Image (cartoon, rainbow, N blue to C red; front, side, top):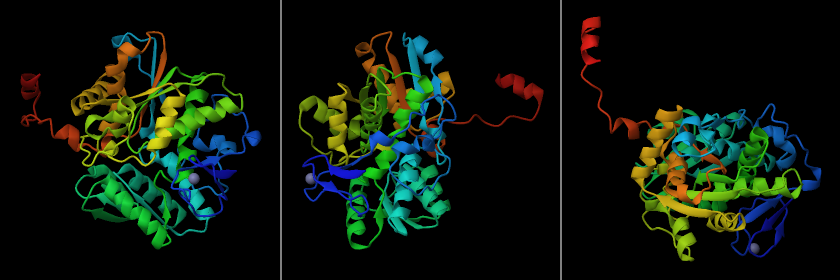
Length: 389
Ligand SMILES: [Zn+2]
């Protein structure tokens, strides 16, 4: 296994603490694919089932992965599609896909002998980092945009025992401070610039193939900091390279309109960060995605695309998924369904599509309750109940 720069190709020893190349390029972990095992039998699915693909020796685990893949029978009928699924990552231990990256990332921290870890977060990353650090018995620091973090996520980070530091600024500002702190203060950075995070997240691809028994035509997912789209694509590519699969899916990334520098870059050809990202989907409220180059590469290589959706479309999709399929996800997660609805014309009726939903709806209950008023209480009698029916 080696660490290799995606820009200049320079290689590094994975035993050294390093997040980026000397040239500033992102690093990628190249796994020894001649040693991987074909365990894809559809049974006993957990993240660590695929350990031969995961480049760490230690293991800090809370039984992550093995999340359900649902067939959306009601919605596929409404959308006149043949095969529509959702991979619900909200079913991970802390309620988001971030646990996949953190089980590997915190394991790597221990391997490197680090006893303090840090991240910038819109919420889910901080909850996950805090939980895995607690399990590992190490100290965690999380920097969050002041006042812009969903309540459930904040509660998680606090109860797991992280040092939570709100900053006057957005996610991108928080990440800048974290990058500097990791250089100066000897803390291990576990944002998705850290290539080992993506090694955990790539297992979403493994599970989709393991659960379906085939590779779907399209995978649609929310894009914020853009680590996940890069990671899932890497997972499919590894399966392809070792010959376990003979086709690759198209990767379709969905951003919220107010935070859509990648969707814009895809359409206009040049990447420019959004100075003031704004969306109700706080988990993808990111103006300067750290992994933007990897993400554009994933989309280009897979002949996929990037699209943006409005907050209204996102909230509508959130309601649809809950009321038609019984799956409650946070707003950012619903952007994958919102994207599918917007792009429906570009998808053949008989194509198989997997939507990724990244986080649990209970992390951000306010968004639902803000727009709903409970009726006045009634007298505790059957008569009174009948009146309100
Ligand atoms: Zn380089």
